[in-house]
Image 1 (cartoon, rainbow, N blue to C red):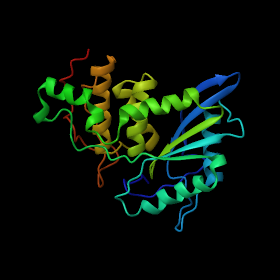
Image 2: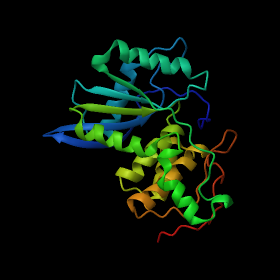
Image 3: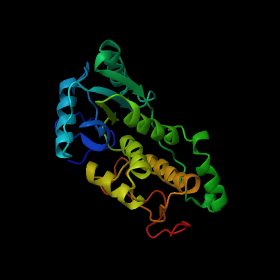
Amino acid sequence: MTPDLHQHIFVDADNVHFVDAIQRGPEQFNFLFRGPNPLTPDPPYSFNYKGLCDGLETAAMKARHALQKPYRIIDINLMQWENADEVPMILTEYKFFRDYSELGEFHFWETNGTGLCAIDEALADPKVRNSLAMNISSWLGDQLEGRMEQLHNWLEFEPPTTVIYAHCEGGIDRTGELMGAYYLRWLNKSWAEMNALNFAIANRAFGCNNYRATLWYCIYLVESLQFKLDYSQAFKCYDPGDQPDGHYACGPPGYSDSPQS
């Protein structure tokens, strides 16, 4: 069954995905992974440390890496305080790393996406759209600009072996936004490749608010950092009740207004 936006999904050996690795010394790497909730399935929740480690090690092996033990986890939680169901999950993770700081550290990066589509009629003037994109950190609460730099700094400068694990509940929508931005910023993925990769991992399109936020970040990369990204193609995104391939909620099929070649 294709996961719904609000369906609880928990970590196992097969649903953690390798994203990136940066070499820190001879045979030494730091790693970035993505996936779903690292807790046990039923409340009262507990942190599933063994299950997460099994998933991380399996994903590393599939990517032809080996995690050198002992490794330290940087756990990035993308859930929302406003979602009452997620509050006990957030607190469970926080308390685990508070009590077992030798195993890693907890970071709460609340992620909401945005309802503002960069190619809405109200933003038809490219000067207005590009100005908003270039100043994305002043209005987009998800702070993708700073978070991309932080992720890469951890990979480059934390002692080996550091393992970053980014997740929401299902590892699809909010995680798709954060990792989608990372694919664009650091892995040289195109706008089309990023959308395809998110779909392949989740077996459905990622959430519409998260898609819109990632589109804004893509335009930021073009306008502020001179990336050669063509964001002219609209892709389907997912809202609850959609079919897995989603619907067009930000630009119609065949949309083309990008200045990029």
